[in-house]
Length: 415
Image 1 (cartoon, rainbow, N blue to C red):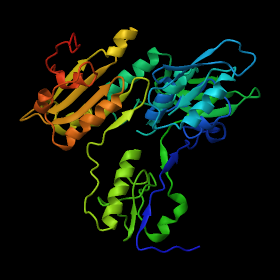
Image 2 (cartoon, one colour):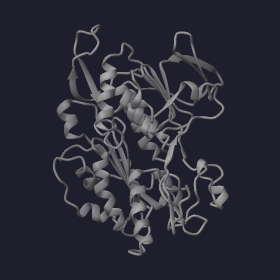
Image 3 (spheres, rainbow, N blue to C red):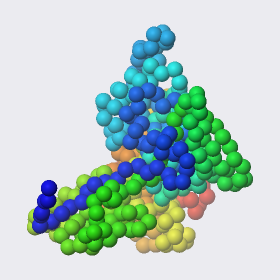
Image 4 (cartoon, helix red, strand yellow):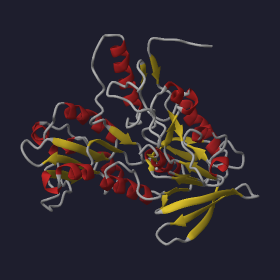
């Protein structure tokens, strides 16, 4: 069949990657696409990578949603099943219920996950969830967690996860995955700090090492559509145009585009309006907010502290920060030592806000509201002029007044 059209739009998205050059990786491993289609519990899991989705699945904030009677006759006691607070972006309810059912029938409760930004966040999200439902979960990290995100915030997230049971293998690189006669998977890896080789067995190995664009089967090279050789992604103009007239693309397959669904949806809508002659508005890819749905959520918009310092210099930025205690943590007597926020501002003039970072309950909800301010050129003065809503976590953002430069204790002590 041959189809012709005045304009062609490519929006095929991407798929999780398997690593190249690691024997047994694809034969015996799974990805985040597979986790909720398993017919039994993944058991003891190794997650390779430290991307956002991976950490969520491993250690998501254990919110007790239901106590289920066991399906297995061998288990005569009820089991509490813990699920993450925010998985609406990841799960359909059918998938969740199916997973809970199969988990309750399984004897094994151990699982390992492995993960790389869309690889790193995926890894941590998966790891958080798996730890939260009681599985033995380990995250193998080649270098740093949540690459591309603010590294102080990334450290708070991994510290929180480690406190609640997720194990981390830092500076480690997998070498091979072998299936033993028992059915267990033996993973061999190297500690890059010492050069020592280590082995351990897992029931599942989950790869979270990034995503690959679905472009190979389209024959784009025959049309002259230019791709980034290293990634296979399509090189795009600001109007989503490719190197071939009348062929456009948007979403994960675009080089340099955020791998975020809402971003792709908005870019697609704007492109459709331009092609229909209804508008000339282009997608604004600056200051796109995002959230890592780990057990303790992390949301951000704008520049990380590292990027702000690189662009403006250490003396050109002012960082306001605070450690706070959410009301729900106080009531439950939970540790809130990783609940933290910081607002990165330009130091001179009106102190334009360059970045906002927040860890805590419902962090995504908090960042979504403040993200609009970035489109309006929000400054630190605007923040101070805003009246907070009490008692909420978000009000701590408009109250923040301690700078890192001052060296004062940033802990919030009262209302």
